[in-house]
Length: 283
Ligand SMILES: [Zn+2]
Image 1: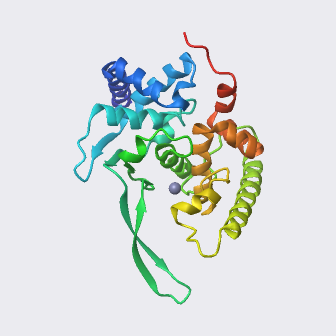
Image 2 (image 1 turned 30 degrees about the vertical axis):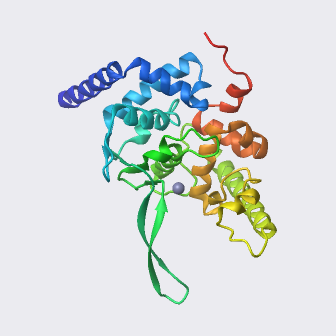
Image 3 (image 1 turned 90 degrees about the horizontal axis):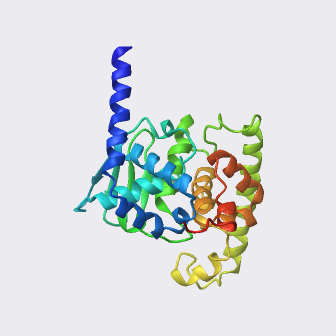
């Protein structure tokens, strides 16, 4: 018991000292760089700083493939990773210890068995990956991007939240949500996912047959969708991509998928569309 208390006290001291070491100027620059962090009110920014310190004190942020790790890289990643758990118990990010950062996109070896039982081995380009019980892997080039249509850090940490009940299936642990939410969640998730898959099919059918649907020029068609078509992969990717849009372009998600937005707002205990519609006046 005493050891447990000592351990907990040591962890709290480590978080407090990590928080003190965060350079206030670097922190202010970071918060004003990202629109979705700028929209936070002073109390939320303070909570974000506390969660960021928790992440930096609890996880090792290491560099791979020749990247030189700096305080700015670690802080930029931790602050974005802190946003989803701003109002949640940070214990949801426990059970693993490392964030690995590549300078840019990296490749993941994959195996896929086709309908004839032939196993195909190939390399998949990735900007991020979340291992079940293992590290979060990120591309710094993508994590540094302040785009308003994707966010690889939020995407991978949403997978971590989803994995909280042992399976990435678009249904994270909902114990803190309103009673009977799970049944409602699964219904709204399935309806929203099916509707999105139908829009993806509709867009795909409009792309001229002589155009590669994965080419850059085909993006004119794909950009009419509310989210990256990658969200149609499965329910886990739908939850992760929706979580990105929920934070970086919340009014779009609230307008396009209001029921799904409301559930995400209940899950994350945040309403970013409301904050953007009623922005805080600068102090
Ligand atoms: Zn994913």
